[in-house]
View 1 (cartoon, helix red, strand yellow):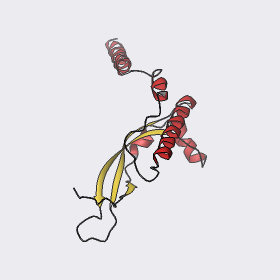
View 2 (tube, one colour):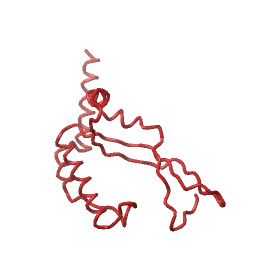
View 3 (cartoon, one colour):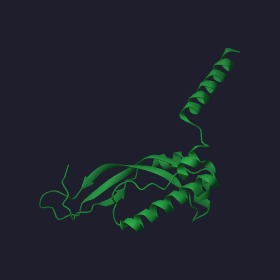
View 4 (spheres, helix red, strand yellow):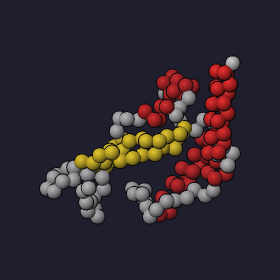
Length: 145
């Protein structure tokens, strides 16, 4: 792993493997993005660094890291979109206060408990497991007939 000096700030590039973004969108969202230029979709995205370049001893290239979208969930309702917009605005305010527009900052900036309130109405892991169990049982029951 290359060592960066205190003044080095790598450029971040998004690699071309962004399939997880499309998979998390509904058919209507994908069509809307195509048919209505300027349409906005809000998402929670997980980025993972995949490669780095330009920081070998004596090399005259600026450091660069490529990241890949490795997880993505798109807001499927106006309520979810508004929650993500509010969380983004809260984090932006935190960067303004910390003076970290060009860097990550001191650590996680918590947008309050708005997301906790929003996710309280969403299914839990237990709900998902129960749904899958019922669906599998229904499939078995239909096959047995």
